[in-house]
Length: 325
Image (cartoon, rainbow, N blue to C red; front, top):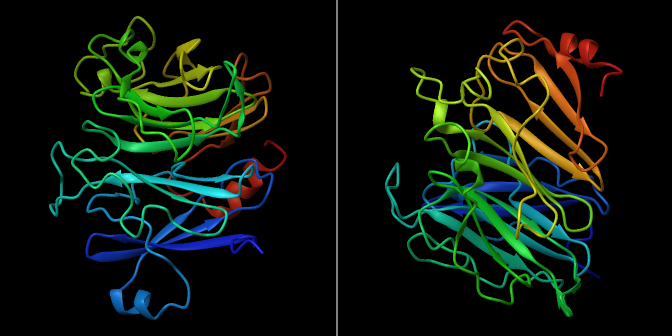
């Protein structure tokens, strides 16, 4: 029997000399892997825990940085799990230019194939160059170009959006990092940062990221597009991320400052189920907003989940969002 057939998988991720507990909830046919929680506990408590296996080691994960990320993937076709994280092998508070995407993979028998510290224990890890905030996407095995492939890619940022990819999960070497470039074709001196990305229907990849070019608070370099500082933008690929047919798309009501004055990194999340794509953002005093597409990101409907302010209680949130999602 598969050792991870229950509704929950719990893994211990050792972050430097201090262990974190990674709790992953998942079911078959989930809309997307549910949000996971990192909680800091003592080394002694982890050692005494009846469950948990170290799967990676880093000194700079920053899991508390606002919204959750898409860093754990359950592959239904072969019942395996792929994991990524921001990896730094230098024990300093703010690593300079040696961080990158860490990686590990669990096969159907429950074996973590890269041991307790993960793959790519070198500067810049699997990324091959300085990057952070990785998002992992894995596709089921399928025919493409006359070959059986199960593509896997990790999207991240460093002065722009970039990714590494390989045609088959955990069997091929990662190809050299690819800079998307398209995120630098809008907003003067701007570039995409803090991506969130998910797999959609067929070969689709859906991604959102803010454009950091206007984040200085002095001059808005996106004036030709929007007056919002650090605007959130949408990107789409229909071929595993090889090319991107929708780039730098402002979601509805982000063309002006009536809803948001600015957007900020990691204040948003994205999910997809076949052709349905959903983006949620909540920032400061601004409204909690849901954008939902039923046609693979071509058109969007906007819903205000909650008119956010600091005194909004959970009861008020439940009441204001009732029947709107």
